[in-house]
Structures are given as structure tokens and as C-alpha cells.
Length: 215
Length: 215
DNA sequence: GTCTATAATCTGATAGAC
DNA sequence: GTCTATCAGATTATAGAC
Image 1 (cartoon, rainbow over the protein chains, first blue to last red):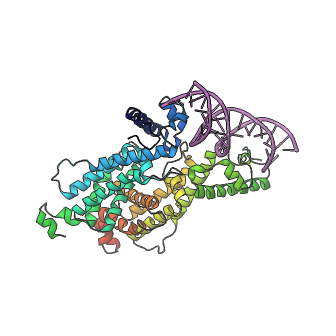
Image 2 (tube, rainbow over the protein chains, first blue to last red):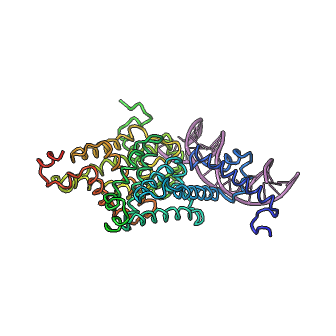
Image 3 (tube, rainbow over the protein chains, first blue to last red):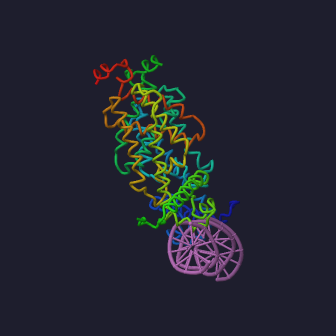
């Protein structure tokens, strides 16, 4: 049963096609990392994989489709990074939240261009497709669950926390790229947030009854 | 004694020249606001002021020079916004800090493109000149002074505060443009910050001796 | 599948006439 | 000061040969 799309009829060809496609995508990721997100051109991309620009259209219908695939790839990496198992599964809720914050920060700072693509909206005509966006939504839902498990029910808490983390990363990237001027402040910021909207998580001894009692 | 630059010799002409220059700059500001920062073109800009693109080069040597002028204009507006007198000069230090935070947030959110130009580094080859950058430095120094006046000497405090404010604005602009989802959280965020690194400012009665005693 | 050829358009910038 | 003319190139994308 061959695919309905313009994909080749045979499975062998389909595999080859998919292989070249992901090869192009990897080259695109390389290119934007070194040249900047806005400087991606079909010419350069084709040259990077040994093709002329026109041949790339056999794999992606448009440049925006490439951005969309990059976005999805980034969103999946984001979900994977945020889903990574904690060192100790029995860790306290607030420890898990601090670990999450560190993961978020590290993920963002490790690839500024990916950060720009995922979290800033800087490419003039580009809007990610729902499919590409979906993993990012899942990652946020994950964080929301972690908050609930820590007994944090204030609906504003998540917004404030994401803002603080986004601010730390954006300042680090814009004003001290490669340094640690804001990286050093992540733990302190999380403690500050927890103190503000979940003091019981910090002050109470780590017993289950205590956690319930302070709610 | 005529100017050495390609400016006209007579004062009348120089005034006319400067007038057209600022007219072009205003048109450029309009254009980037409506079309996006990266979409500025000399053709469109010329058309906006009733010229051909080539004639604009009589006023700005390059497109980057226009970006630089826009940057300087934005930085001066930023300094002006942050220097605006508080409603009551006798206000408490922490009230002044909260007012500053609100001013910063409002300034950023009121003009997303200007924010992008000033605080994100998104135009491929553009680096603002020291002259253009200078007012922004002055504005930060102003904030630093305000912190000192509130008795906050922790060197990390300013970095953390700017990060939190930057995060609130960036989330507001990216995820709820025109709304108030993060705007509502500004006061709470400032209180949280103050509680963390200057609790004495909040808890102590507003007397001078008290302020000194808690240091 | 990849190529050549090319459409159609946009870019910043310069030279020189008026 | 502004124009015409033009350079020298970039861009995305399509049509059709091989």
C-alpha cells in the first residue's frame, strides 16, 4: 500500500527519501546555528548537502516547511529534555522543580538559535504548524503537573515561574553569551519563587503528613 | 566655517537637511513597526517619504546607519522613560522601585519592535555604535542608583531584577500580545524580589533611623 | 532525483545627469 | 537634492530535460 503523498512508491525509495530529508534537516540546523536563523537560504542549504537549491524542493515544499520541521525537531528535543528522569525518583517536590529549572535553562542556553526559533517569534512570516507545536505544549503540561505535585495550585505561579526562567535565559544569551552571570542565579531564583508561592514546601520537614498539613 | 562632512555649507540648508533626516527616521520607525524590523528596505523607506531609494543615501550612508539612528532614538526614549519624575518625590524607596519596574514594563510592551531592536540582538550584521548605546547605559546606571538608595547592595540583585523584568515583558510580548496576563504579575514580582534581597525595606517602618539600623 | 534554465522579484549601493 | 540608469547580486520557486 503505497503512500498517497508525492513520496516514491517503493519502500526502499521511501526510506532513501526520508534519509535524505533528515540529512537536509541536519544541514539546515547546522547552517542556522552558524549563520543565524534569518540567514538560511535554499542555495546554501543545497550546497551543504551537495545539491542545487532547486533540488531541495523535492524534499521540502518551501523554506517555511524547513523552519517548521526545525521547530518540531526543537520542540521534541525540548520535551525530551524536560521529561528526562530525575537523578533520584524519590526526590522532594521542590528539588524536582529546581532540577526542572536547571534543565530548562541549560536547554535554552545550549542552543541560542533554537531558543530564538522556539520561544522568540522573530521570523517575519513564519507560524509553526499545530503538529510542530504540539510537543512544546506537552512539555508545558509536564511542568504544570510538577507544580501540582508540589502542592502549588496558584494559577499565576506557573506564569510567574516561566517568566523568571525566560528572563534569566534571555539575559544570559543577550548580555553574557557563553558566561554564567545569570546561570549562577537560577537556583536562587527558584528558591525565591518557591518562598513566594509555596513556603510550606520549603519550611516543612520532608514528611508526607507535613506536606498535607500545611496545605 | 562650513562643516567638513557632506552637509551643506549654509545654516539654512543644514536645517533643511536635518529636518528631512528626522522625517526619514520617523518614516523608518513607522515602517519597522508595521512591517517588522527585518523587513526594512531602502526602497520602501524612500517611497514613504516621497523619494526614490537612492536619494535616501544623501541622508544616511547605509541601512545600518538607519538602524543605528533608530537604536539611539530608542535608547534615548528609554532613558527618558526611566528618568521620568515619580509622582511623589518623597515616596519610599520600595515604592520608587515598583514604579520603575512598571515604567520599564510599559516602555517595553508599548513598542515590541523597539524592544526587539534595543534588547534582543536579532538583526544579523548590526551592532549599535557606542554613541547610540550610551543612553541605555545611563538608564541602567539610574536603576543601579535607585537600588543603592533602597539599601540594596547585593551585586546579584540588579541582575536578578533585570532578568525577572525582562522575562515578564518577553513572555507578555511573545505569548499574550496586547493582553495583560504577565502585566498583572509585575507588582507581585517586584514584591517577591524585594522580599528576597531587601526584606528590611518592606518590613521596617519608613523612618531614616530604621533604614540605617537594619543595614 | 537531480539537473539546467529561468521566471519574477527583491536587495543595497553607486555614477552621473539635471 | 533628487532624479534616471544601472550594477551586481541576492532571494524563492517553477518547468522541463535527462
